[in-house]
Length: 291
Length: 161
Image 1 (tube, rainbow over the protein chains, first blue to last red):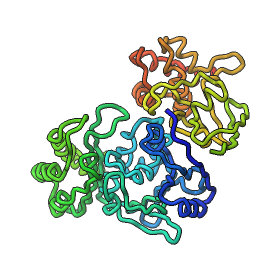
Image 2: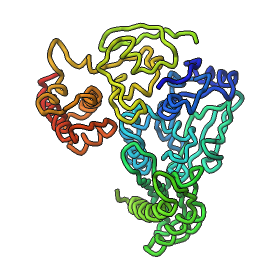
Image 3: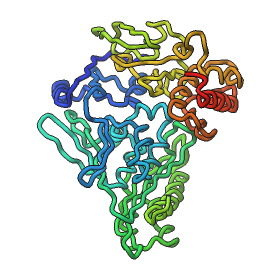
C-alpha cells in the first residue's frame, strides 16, 4: 500500500517547525513516531498534502522529573519508558500502560505524545494521563500554552490542539507520598486496541482515607473518558471491599461503550466494572508500598 | 513531487538515492537496493516480516518512510552474516529448526539480533514478549524461542561477534 504523494519537511529547530506549521495550516500533519499516521496514510484514511517530520528536532527526547513534574518530551518513544529508571521505580502506572501498547517493534518508534495528539479514544496513554491529572504543553506561533488533560480530548479524533500548534510535552504532577496507580487493559491479542481499559491513580492520607482519585477509561466512548462521578465518590472513603465494589459499579455506569467487533456494549460495561475494581486494588497496594 | 536526496548506511555500506517522500523504507530496501531479504507481509504493521534494525532498534520498515532514514544506519538480514560466517541468531534458527516456510524469518532474525544485543541472558518469557510483534504461522514459536536461546548461549560464550 502506497500513501498519496505529499510534500515533506524535516525542520531542524522547533521554531522552524512551528513557523512551517503556521504557513502550511491545517492541511499539514506532524509526523513523530508515525505508527498511527503512516498506517492511516497507507490506507488513505489520511491524505495530508504536507508532512512536517519533527524527528530531527533537538532536545525533545526526554522523560525526566523537574520542578515538581514528570516531563515527557514529544520524541520520547514508548520503548524509552520501559528502560527509564524513573518510570520503572516511580511510575508503575506508566509502565503498565506502555507495555500493553501495540508490540515491541511499534513501541520502538511510537511516542507517548503522539498517542495523545492522535485523539483516538482507543489509545492507552489518554486514560492514564486523565488519571494522573497531566497537562499538555502546546507550542504555537505566538505562544506556548498549557492545556489541562480533562479539556484536551474534545471529540472523536479531535483534540484541543489548534491547527498551528505542536504538542511539545506532557507534564505529570509528581505524585504525593502514599500515591499509587495502575492501568489495566483487556485486549483480544497483542497489538489490538483495548476492548476496554481502566487507569486509576489514588492518593491516601495517613489514616488510609482516599483524598485524591483520578480515573480514566479507554475505548468505551467517543473520547477517552474521565470517570468524574467515580472519582468524587472515592474521595473521603477508605478503600475497603464495599467501597471498591460501589466505585466499580459507578465507573461502569459512566462508560459509554457501543457494540462493535470487540464485544457488545453490555460486555464492555461489565469489563469496566471488573477492571476498575482490579485497578483500584492494585493502586491501593502500590500506594501502601507494594508492587 | 520533487524527489529527495537521501544517504543511508545499509549493512555498513553508504548508499545514496533520490526518493519520493512517500516511499516506504521497506520498498526502498527491496526495490531500490534490491535487498529482498526484508519481506512485505501484512503491509499494515501487524506481522513484523519487514523488521529491520534502524540505529540499533528493531522497527517495522513498512511503517517508516525512507526519507526518515536519511543519515542513519540500517541493518537488514543480508548484513547479519560476516565473512561467510552466520551470526549466532542465524545459526540458532538453523540448529533448532526455527523456521518452516521462512517468510517471517528475516524479521524474526532482526528482532532477535536487536533483542539479544540488550539481553544476552533472556528467559523464555522475555523472548516470547520480544517476538510478540512478529507473526509466524508455521512453527508455533516453540523452535523460534529455542533458536533465540541457542543464540543467547552462543553470544554469552563470546563465540560470535
